[in-house]
Length: 149
Image (cartoon, rainbow, N blue to C red; front, side, top):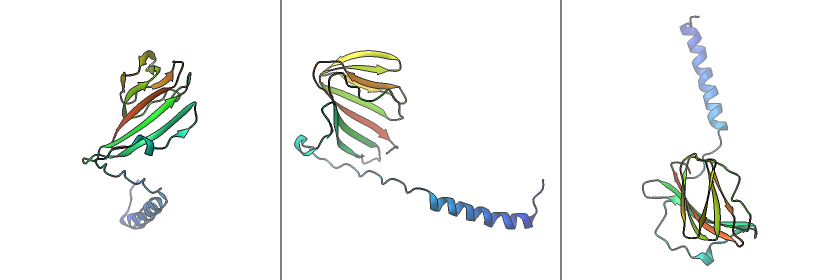
């Protein structure tokens, strides 16, 4: 099949019109997180959401001066509760257990960890936590989001 200059003359404006229409219907990009300032985050000023079975609170979300996105949040699980079904995502996570005992599931294997333990979930590893102790389990998640907000 050959395309003449006349065909191109008709085709190019039509393609440009379609491209403009697609651009106009694209959802707006999410606002970029702000650069994080030096700050002390007081526990009594950070509200929880959820209930006694599972609650949490976002402590911070923003970027470093180099544009690296980071989030820190706290999760509290009641006895027998799971953080969420096993899932995976691109960003890495560091989790610091400050209270209770958990069972961590990572790529088909489970392991127990008590308060003071730290876990690292690599990119795209299937993972979750379960509170296996008699009381509440509390831990902090540091999400290393990189370019992904």
